Image 1 (tube, rainbow, N blue to C red):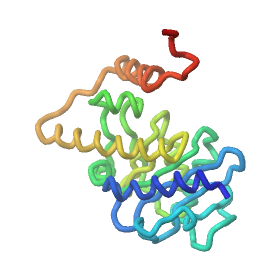
Image 2: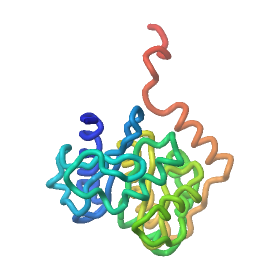
Image 3: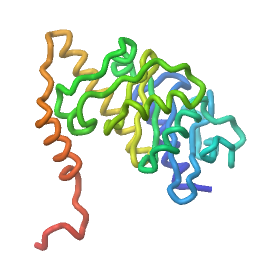
Length: 222
């Protein structure tokens, strides 16, 4: 069931460890099948090195296990709360990447002082209030503060990112950590200036409308 999605979600979970976005068994990535609405997610407490596509767990949007012998991630309810409210989201990632999470530890947003933050996140990366783990409340808080940002810092907890796919969700987490490191280093040397709102908007539109390869149909004839 959902073989391609299982493969993608498995690879993205393994990338969490490879990129240093979480340690040991913490962190997780899920992906939603657009046809069935079912969600593939990492099992709870399993080492990334031991993950295979067939060890992942398939659940419905109410959290009922449809396929898999292991318990799903303890963050499953958070992921599902996001999916139920955001039909445009096809992937969710949760990481504890150190530089981004250091902002969460201080309850601080990451200011849009880099073009990367303007382009990928549409401005400051917001921070949500502290919410106890283990239920849907974190997901609701992510939804409350996200705006158009694909990433939210949860106070004294970590990072949640969303995307059209599991790959897009983890890409946002990886780009956020790189930006957070740069902002951290800049703050050690001074106070970086944030981009003006009109430049944030221009960068955001440019990135989302022009970056990457055009579709074959839109390429000019040679």
